[in-house]
Amino acid sequence: MIVLLSAAHPGDDMRVVRKEGAALVAAGWPVTHLCPGPAGSVAGVVAGVVVEAVAGPSRWRRWRALHARCVALRPRVIHASEPDAWALALLAGWRCGAKVVLDVHEHYPSRLDTRLPAWLRPLARGAIRLAMRGMGRRADAVVLAKDGLAEEFPGARRRVAVRNHALVPEGLPRRRHRAGPVTLLHLGAIGVARGWPVLLAALAQSPGDTRLLIIGRFTDGSEGAFRAAAAAMHLAPRIEIAGWMPAEAALARAAAEADINLVLFQPGEENHRLALPHKLFDGMALGLPVIAPDFAPGVAEIIRDSGCGLLVDVTDPAAIAVAVATLTDPARRAALGDAGWQAARGAWGWPAEAAKLVALYRELLGEARLSDTSASADTSRSPAHRCTAAAHPAAAP
Image 1 (cartoon, one colour):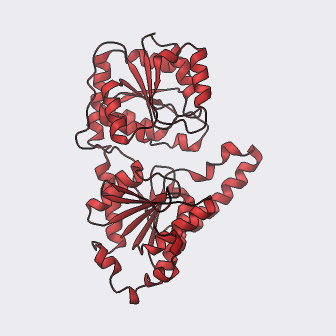
Image 2 (image 1 turned 90 degrees about the vertical axis):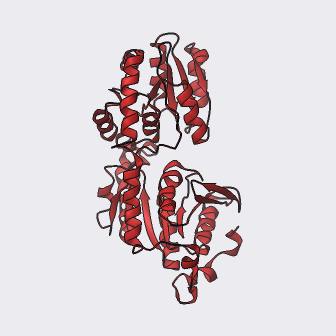
Image 3 (image 1 turned 90 degrees about the horizontal axis):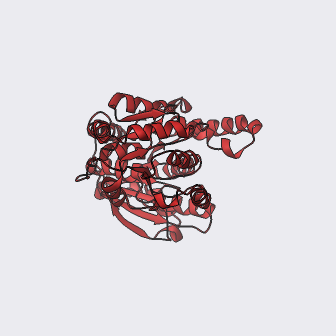
């Protein structure tokens, strides 16, 4: 068994479950995603991955429960998705004899920059970097979700790039571009740092029949401020906040209504500069042209290579409004959208990245195909035998 261990990611997370987990299942290995959730619940099966939720009344208790349940499952490999999950995985792997893979999604040394005074940031970055390097040296492999992260793991045994490229579900609808008013789309998490203040200002400078559809959550607590600002600018009638939706429903809604995909990450955060956002690839897969930041090298490379959108100064509402005006031409939207649609199924598609992940696992496991029988066989002589006695019984569902 392979356990995907998450301390924060949701049960049906796009990268962890729908991309990585599904790729491992398709290669023949049983996979369980162990994640936070209601106490002792099993959330079901997503993309072939068994999703099991574990709860605790505090973060510390939740960590203990996740660790204990991971040990009790006796996995052959633990694939962990955040720094706190990396630490839990390394401890569980030591107890079980399991191999450990660290999945690196973000530039973690800079994560605290916005919460700390400037004088303290170098010290915090140094401490986080030191901890990451220590964990990287102890893991069996480090998987990197985007460029600019490898340098944080100089002593890792294996470093493998598995980028967040486009996953195109079977039967995904495609947007057909027609003349008429356009609807702007913001898909996924939204907040001040993801550009809603400049988005509202750009909408105010766009034609009066331009609409905005938001599918996703405000993740920084700023929804009230957004609504107040929209009302003050007399934009509220042109905006719909649809909220969070399951992936299939969100993409279907976008294909039916949206005309222009927006990625408006603001500068000032290293993770924004290094971003490879799911929303970019989702829009490409739907055939939507994108307006995106020119300061993010990974995003800019994709857009220039595929010809799927326009790069702008996302701090300038006027520049965004000019890009929107350019894309009111349905022929222009269709041309850029078609380029993205093709790229999502070709050079920037997920299958090539999935193959790199599967190749890593075949190397780690000696080409073996795991099964429930082989994973639990002869545990009396296996290092994993220690897991059963060591498991915290109250944490198991």
